[in-house]
Amino acid sequence: MIFDSHAHYDDDRYDEDREDVLRMIQEQGVGLIMNAGSTEQTSRAAIELSKAYDFIYSSVGIHPHFVEKITDADIDTLAALATDPKNIDRVKAVGEIGLDYFYDNSPRDIQKVRFAQQIDMARQLSLPIIIHSRDATQDTLEILKRENASVNGGVMHCFAGSRETMEIVVKMGFYVGFGGAVTFKNAHNAVESVRHISEESLLIETDCPYLAPVPHRGERNHSGYLKLIIDKIAEIRETTSEHIEEVTWNNAKNLFRV
Ligand SMILES: [Zn+2]
Ligand SMILES: [Zn+2]
Image 1 (cartoon, rainbow, N blue to C red):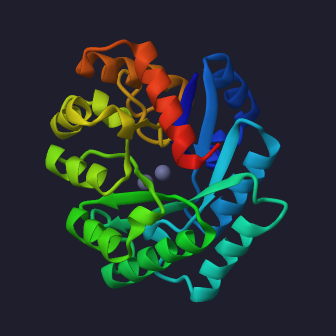
Image 2: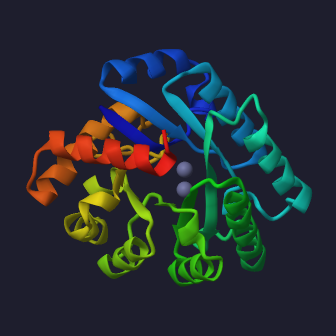
């Protein structure tokens, strides 16, 4: 079965037909999903989804896009959500957290502080982290090292970096998540990383509704399209799709301890 290690089914692009989509992807072989939070509001929505559907788990975290105006109290609220007895069995990670210097929607110094703080929160909660890093490799690796984040474990999600970066991330003990980008024409870095990564560190993800793979690029994404990503990874690694499906299923279960 397929484990989608990163999705956003709380997104309003599913408001019209969320139930239908979730039923349809189950029929297409999707067995488990990690629905990531990116604000307090979407973290709450992720938790609600994971309580409504057995095959969905949730994470709580504030994405670097949205950290500019948050306070320490907001971080405490996330921790309280994760440890609430009504939620605790469904919340399996802290994220997505990290740095985004491509959009720079929040000042970089604030991004760094809130990233480090949420790593610390994850450690206190004994949860793995879901890392978002875009055009910020150096600072991301530095903070992960400084905060000793390897203790938490986690995944560098939506990876499109170089083979060298992938190898550092793996050596630090993190999983690496690959999605629709591996099917894009200009995906040289992602393809090289997929080719050389050790099997034990490989995860697949949609990041839906974003990043639909070819030939659906630009459309609303869903976990059923992971088959296309699995096929592409199998082709790159010269193995079978069944093998990639099985390996990534087991890896995601290990990471999120489910
Ligand atoms: Zn992300
Ligand atoms: Zn995401």
